Image (cartoon, rainbow, N blue to C red; front, side, top):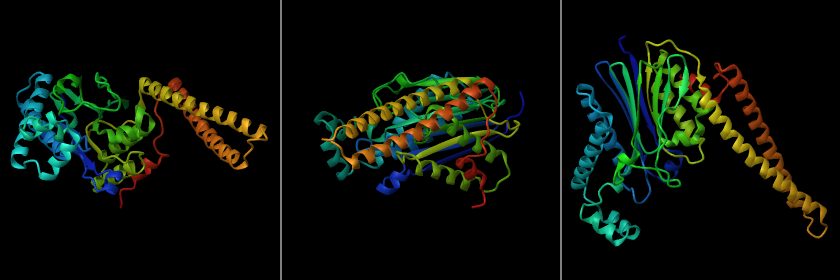
Amino acid sequence: MAKKNFAVFNKSLQGASHVKRGVKCQDCSFCGTLGEEYFIIVADGHGGRKHFRSDRGAIIACNSAAQKIWEYMRAPREIPDLMSEIIKMWRAEVDKDVAKYPWGKRELEEQKELLTEERFIELVNGKNNYTPYGCTFVAAFTHGDEFIAMQIGDGAFALVTDDGYYSWPMPESNYNDGNKTYSLCADNPMLDFRFIKGQGQPLAMFVYSDGIEKTYPNNGRDIIVLLDRLVVLHKGDSENKEAVVNKGLQYVTDNSESGDDVSIAGMINLSCEYVKPRPSPIQLEKEKNALLAQLREIENTISYNSDRRGDLSGNTFVYNSTAINQIDEIIARKQKEAEELRNRITEIDAKLQEFGEFDTGDNTMSSLFDDDQD
């Protein structure tokens, strides 16, 4: 087996909305090495009033996972057993944290308002320590000629093969309850545990939180451009990598609807020749289907507003020029959005026929990561 030589990095950044509201960053990320083995970890605290110590829960999750992954590298075992050990250590460390920093008066007053009497009594008696520390978890690591990724809750694992194909091979969650996600604080976190194993040395692997996942959904062009720029950056000789990653992630949270915290950790194979991105046909089809769904929504909006405009302009009793002008503005804006979507769908269709590389240069994200002088 060829000697492994990866560059590893991690970065967590407080979300734009959290900065405005004075909320701590709920994410934590970590990376490390042991000999020729490498690992990357991201934990995302839930935030919110019931999870009032989830920032610490995420830190404890990263530390617990790092410890147990190090142990695995010395003494391999079944991957579900490894995840169970991480959960047990996380819970033990949470219990220690509560013992060291007991619930404060203000914390208890707020929880008394939120929780049922039964759950509040459990919290006071130390039988509900984990909910306040709740977080999700995703990690990846190398071991011998294998790579392994595992996950509980949301977030993502991205794989870039040595021939440049981008994929998100983690099985989807079996847990589906509206907008909720599974957590290390659940009664049985293993119900949502997923993992994959692969052979060989990929060009890169990434794990990242849902702050990035929600900003660039459907694993389409934008997230591939972001990850490709990170590959190029870490394979280059820039001495300012951390600042460039920070600037790129700041752009992500500043331009997302949620303004959530963002975290990413990655490992880039320095022994592997760089290849321009080649999205897999599965990912291209997923992106196309998502764009088609958006296009149908926009077309429905255009049709509805066109009907409304006809009703207003054709009926002298309800004629209102201001309302008609507003409707015209909506229709014009939506027609422009529809045209942009149709153009992107046409591009995807062409890529599916050619099935090759795509250019990442003409892109705001690309220019951010290329400018490493700031």
